[in-house]
Amino acid sequence: MSPERNDRVQRIAAARAGAGRGERPLTARSVIASLLLGMRPPRLAGSRLVRWCGVFGISEGTARVALHRMVERGELTVADGVYELAGRVRARQPVQDFALAPRLDDWAGDWLLALVAPGRRRAADRLALRDAMRRLRLAELREGCWARPANLPRAAAPADAWEVAEAQCTWWRATPHEDARRLAAGLFAPAEWARGARRLERRLRVATEALADPRPDDLAEAFTAGAAALVHVRADPLLPPALLPGDWPGDALRDAYREYQPAFGAAVRHWFREEA
Image (tube, rainbow, N blue to C red):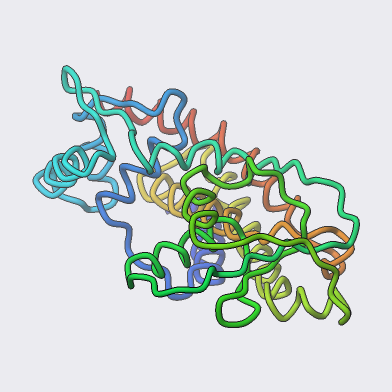
């Protein structure tokens, strides 16, 4: 191994070790969905999806079973051997695009409150509401009361999340008496998000650099780093600047991802041509 290659391997390993604590191995479903979510339009031949899964050590049989099950669940459609994202998974694309380039409303200091309507609810409804509130970026202030600063447009979350939340809650605007920055820190833990964002930015920049002359392991690491960065960006609470800690790394992580996208896309296209 050349000294240059050895140095790059060491830097990739260090970046991955720093950002990938507790990272679970990617499943065939997550590999397929993540690759398609980054494509416009989100479709690809099944043979190529199967080959791409092989980069992560996923067997052809496992990949084809995952494709079949995703079609059954309405997550993919298939025609003439070409698979395309569908349903709730495809609905992530506009939300993901918003998370990468958020357009926030001006904030006047008021907060959005969602109060769960009185009455008995099924366990499935309670679970659906928790999932909807997570996607709406609201935090639970207390039992049955969810809140966040009123600075997000409706487009920041998918329509189905709004439908679930509005069916089970009444909505209010209010201004807290306590310090809003302290309240936001307790509810959304922005400092913790920032620590993760800085680790992921470093990892993503190293992975992007390696894509200039990638090996299969470089492709796999770049894909994993990009997927981890996207998950983290989607978890950004998108608080008003006045409520954020200093040196907020949200823009830096998004900039790193925007640099990564074309480099990764070009590397994948080259890999498919070489593997053909």
